[in-house]
Image (tube, rainbow, N blue to C red; front, side, top):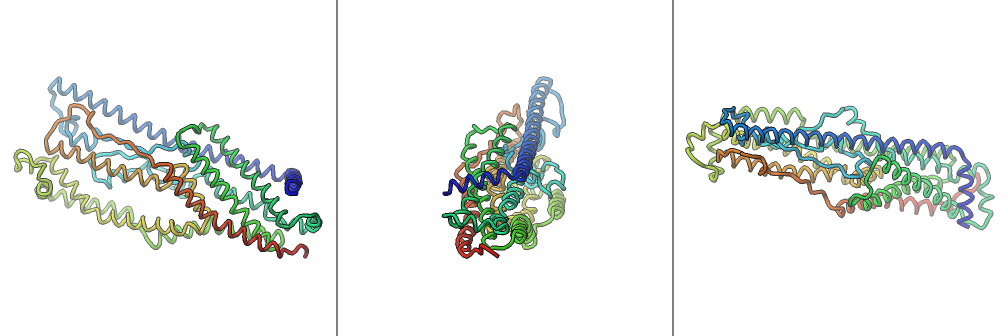
Length: 477
């Protein structure tokens, strides 16, 4: 009987021209969103390529200059001397560290347009190095990008609701529901057949169109770890779709007219997809406001001015804290500009640290509020899952920043030792290098599974409610 119901419902559904128009528009949205995501990834890759090319050409130029200076015994300013460890570590030999996009990055821009994908590492203070970001249109940062994740989170539910809000009410209003139930079938079986057909059609359309668009834009589906992530992506799409089907059936089970169902479901979509995420973000910002950028810059400037005025005193203190660096004439070292710069930079970091710590603590508190309350909205859970799968979420970027901070410490320690030893660099082959270690697939899987579980719980509750409520569904009136 179920197969018969599916065939009959498919004939009725496919005969309606509106569904093909809706699917066509949805297919165009999927294609456009995927292309937009691919364009953003291409922009990132171009920026990374340009940064690496600039680094390579700069290092080659300075190494060539070292050979020429040594051969000609030329005199050159210490600030421009490619052999001077202070100049090399501070600017001449600076290296770029990058967060490479994953193969599935085009599927969800996520936070990759807000969080920098590369840093230029120097011996400057940590906050100076990590504060440098790409310049982006602030209006676009505010509104976000129209990518595939946007289509799935915002438009996919609307498509489901548009074709399920009158799942039972239309037949009831036309007087055919009683006729259909005169056959040896139950109302629950009828609803299950309608939902199963629509869910299968929508899921196949979304997954198929998304995969087709991904192949067209050149996503490497054979890259390591891509297939498991694609499986999680399909599971996320299915779970999110099931939630909205369950919501539509639960509302339909109340026995209200089609117009009422449409209004209620539109309100549910507006609340869960738009209002709850916005209000949650506003609440987190209001409860835990972060220090302004101006305050951070002002604190750095004041600390720098005060530390520069105490240069020799700070160097003496620096020697007390690092006796292993004492070499040669200590009194002469007090007048060495390069050594004083190291001590001043360390003091600036110490004085600015309270402001940076407060910024970090407030930001962490904001993220914890959102993390705890994200189960209030399946849209937030879906966004988190899609970002994790695409590698454009906050968790992967935090891991990147932690590795950058460790590399920055190694970079500074390397040059501080050379500066205090008054060494001269003859080539750059020994400079510390950076290699990003990406997180394991298991860590991503656990986060995505948590998000999917958060969507599954209300889906089951809504399905149980609908199952119970259908027993008292008014067939007439």
